[in-house]
Length: 175
Image 1 (tube, rainbow, N blue to C red):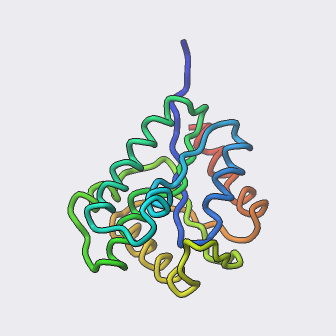
Image 2: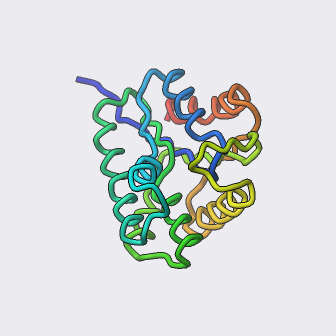
């Protein structure tokens, strides 16, 4: 059997920056699966701000889900966020960065994509506001740089973002 290893692509960015929309489009284009954001599901389940302990668990479950979905992925595993996003929530909501969450946030991916906050902000009853989105975005950039995790920025429409990613996807496949 000559199966190629699955490569992981992680989408990061603030609320309403197009991560989920891009995850769905990438998975469709690449003929693979995408891992939904567990933190949002958990937030909806309990109906409010997650405690520090809950956020640590969200980071752990997100990683568990990535590992489970990888078994069904073809070529690429598309991750709609990572524990780095969960760490940003913890810092902004609780003013702390638990060691367990920091460790999970440093998880490497074959390609990290940062979605610029240039989509129209859509309030879906779960999100805060455009100011919070900007704070999330800036903190994600700082953490990626602090952790030495290389990333690619995408902006514009979904079609534009897909075109911007093509060279990186082709390069990774050729490697």
